[in-house]
Image (cartoon, rainbow, N blue to C red; front, side):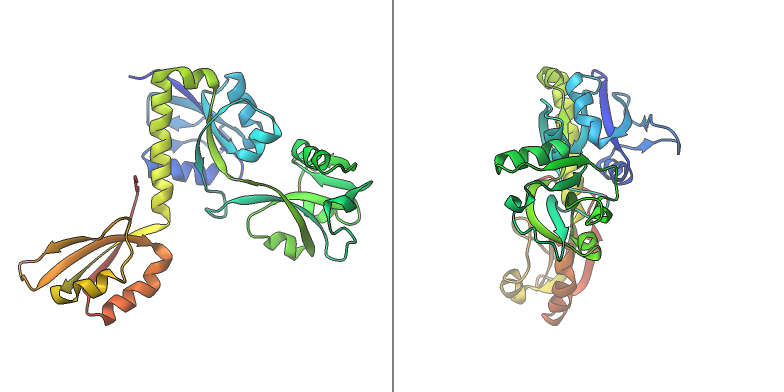
Amino acid sequence: MCALLNFGLPKGSLEEPTVKLFGKAGFRITKGSRSYTPCWDDPDLEGRFVRAQEMSRYVEDGFFDCGLTGRDWVKENDSSVEIVADLIYSRASNRISKWVLAVPEQSEIHTVSDLSGKTIATELVNVTRSYLDENGVEAEVEFSWGATEVKVPELVDAIVDLTETGSSLRANKLRIVDVLMETNTVLIANKSTWADQEKRAKIENIALMLSAALEADTKVGLKFNLERSKLDEVLQKVPSLRKPTVSSLSDESWIALETVIEKKVSRELIPMLKRMGAEGIVEFPLNKIVP
């Protein structure tokens, strides 16, 4: 048995996708609807759910050995922690998010310089103030408790808000002026914990399995039978992680081919393979991919 690892899990919008990701990675996490303490199926793990905004401080102070949070909150809290792995996932998608400066569509603010003397609402106060300092702009930055996009133009002149697709900003008739930073979920570790070889190995194992589960999330396996004479033609069309696996069938004039492809590619690739003479085409889900 390894040394016990105290793991911080994000409460809120990341909670459900995080539990799902751990399950796909091979770690079963259960908890009651009002509980902040998860039950793990790994005896070497314990921990609790806390807000992602606070996670890096708890990891830095040693309350947690490691945890999941956003790069943005590590920077906002100016936390001295080890960033172990980037894990690009969120409640809505598996894509990089951005903190953007946004104003009403008809606003006269077009550059950061136009913010001089204005008021900005955001949850990312320290990063926003640093951004203004770097650009030599003096403006008031106030903390926003939520629903930041509805505060302009009546309550504030501009906002700094998190977006993945920009759809919420467009729905509220807001225009992006600048991007302050990109962010995604990261696995972080306490510096002292990271120096402990036994605990570090456990954290690296978890990071590997979580990354492998995320890598598999956007891909599928594909296998089919094909006349051997068509192999060279098909190989020019079929993507793979490295090279497709080709196996002989009992009928030497036929082969079986197996590969891994992006999910979104299959909708075009499968009909094309059928037209090229492929038979017995099977698409199957993947649980983990370790490069």
